[in-house]
Length: 311
Ligand code: ADP
Ligand code: MG
Image (cartoon, rainbow, N blue to C red; front, side, top):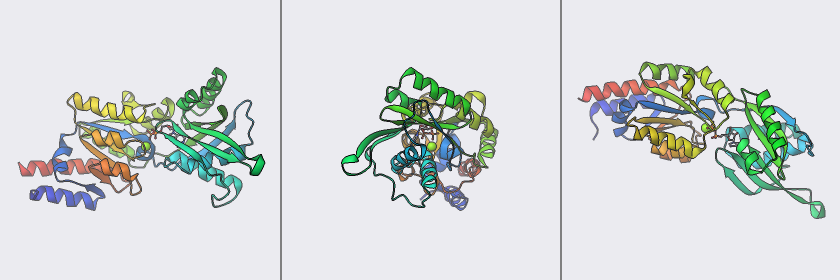
């Protein structure tokens, strides 16, 4: 069995909502020197709200109808953006259920980009299939959007600098811009301060765009160069691997939506949330069952003590 100090550390961590799955993690945690923190759903609550829906020039769609298409598609996504769009659309149609949403077909989740699928509008001979794509700037590239659309979306992003922005593309044409906001978890700043006190190097890693990313990272107290944005999921993983290669042991904290691979290659992968995508929880050595993020830094301190006692 594991030494007594290790067993005690695991029990104490568990009572603070930090589930350490294997005893060797108690020894591994104090060796960590770099910490990667996912943004959406990790440093932020991941309870997003749609702030604004703006028609783009030449939009051929009624806003309510377009939002219903978007929501029908997002029903198939676990991303915090998806939940926000669904509740906004259901609010628009004034129902509390989703039965009047079309059923999306040929759905493709595009990690770090968005989601796409086919939706049928109308019935019988009037039925028409529309290709719907929701996502960030990369989605516009995927749709081969023309330069004017790219520019217009950039302007929209510029107007909502601090928010997460999403393009709604129907049948290959940019129709709407959506701006969403999220809130920092109350203990995010405390976690980062405590990590710095422990002489660890915390970074934020996100698939979101530059300004939204920098806004959150400044609030959370991260150093300017420690905000890594517009990363695809595999780039998060590559960052962890490059830290590992440089001889820095890495802890990666994520909510599991799109960061399972980064969690898997980290020295210590930590998944947050009771609901947190099961996939990431599997590839994580530690599960944070609390939204009190600073319980993680305190757990590192405790493991440092436990390791010292054993030696
Ligand atoms: P984070 O790293 O902050 O957790 P993700 O990598 O999950 O963010 O997503 C990055 C970006 O990709 C989002 O900011 C959004 O623009 C886009 N995106 C991802 N999933 C979706 C979705 N289901 N609907 C719309 N946009 C999405
Ligand atoms: Mg996330």
